[in-house]
Length: 220
Image 1 (cartoon, rainbow, N blue to C red):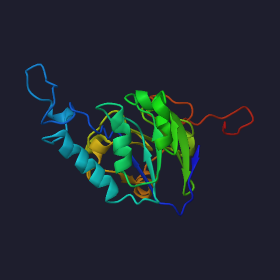
Image 2 (spheres, rainbow, N blue to C red; image 1 turned 60 degrees about the vertical axis):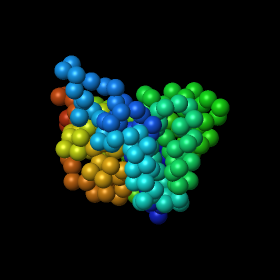
Image 3 (cartoon, rainbow, N blue to C red; image 1 turned 135 degrees about the horizontal axis):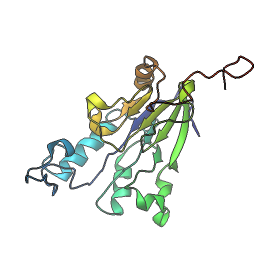
Image 4 (spheres, helix red, strand yellow; image 1 turned 180 degrees about the horizontal axis):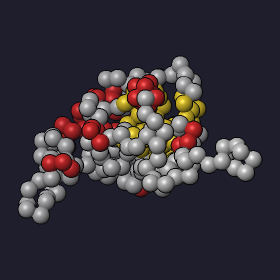
């Protein structure tokens, strides 16, 4: 559980993929069956250096050194050294990392690399401004506290902007679906989620459907 004082400024992002050659359209080796480059699966940059620079600048332009940055995984590619290279380029002192499927070196804590981050987890909950967030790199269909209005934020699936919201209080905070191609302000996410109803991804979810016990009370 991460607890952050309401006076701190908190930001969240996922799937930066620093140094990832194939996600960069100008140098990608990915091809569709017809031989064309998959436009929807690549980022519109000519070089990896250009992509990295834009991501770093977009983060540092709004996230201050004394703010809190939460990263939901898939930090970097291109070799073990890039983990530290890009951590050093981010000015924010406090970064909490939720491990993604491409964070093998960090998960294994090679050369104590986890020390670069304030915390490293596969899954955690965050309390901030009286809201509870369930944080995981992977999208969850039915998460802890869904029926209480807890908000689930994830990455992994690189959803476009128009599809970044799941059913109910669920959202992909990956960089590719962010119109600003950067971080999300947690205060903005709270405002967006407050308007959304409590709904499950599941066709039937007994955590949502009202169930009455024999004594006439709602099941807790």
